[in-house]
Length: 239
View 1 (cartoon, helix red, strand yellow):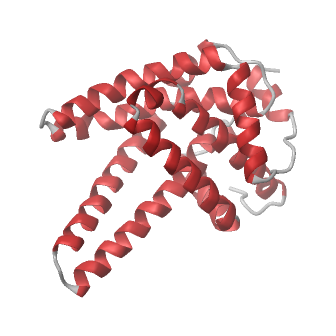
View 2 (cartoon, one colour):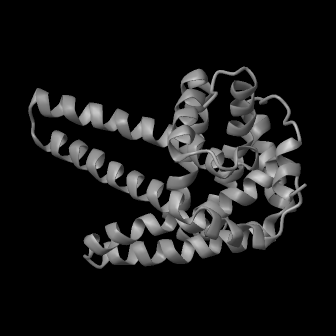
């Protein structure tokens, strides 16, 4: 039996409260900090390039390169998924995820980047229009960004989850939406925590580049995987 099969076979405990989840993710990070920080640093190097291009006035290049950040990101989430399922991890698990999920991660990263740019542009254009219709468009686009963020929290752990090897992008996206819709209050709380941590860590650039993203991945896996397992076991999310 492969390591992925062993991790997939381990049942996860029922999803706990938000604060218990945050505490468990912090403990996970403490015990696996070296591997997670290295994986986070690799993502941080790519993020620095994209951010530098944006600040330097080359947003078009940044837009083209941004989807590539999904490659080191799946490495971080893969580590977090193994950790959440109680498996021992090594740094090579992240590198293996780069190869295994290169195409789906790049496709999902490109789709997410395009959606963020389109929705963000609609928010800005709507707010600048100074008309009720424009404000309505801005409001709808803002809610679209919120929904995209919540579904993304669910999507990435499910994409790399060892229990769901080989599931298509479409099936993963469908399950992600079902998990969010079945637990809107819980995901609202998680989304708020993730957003606050991401914004603060981005302002303090060293945090987002070194550890914050790995901690967010652990939180997401701790929340998402038990909820998705429950839907799968109940037959709600059958392919």
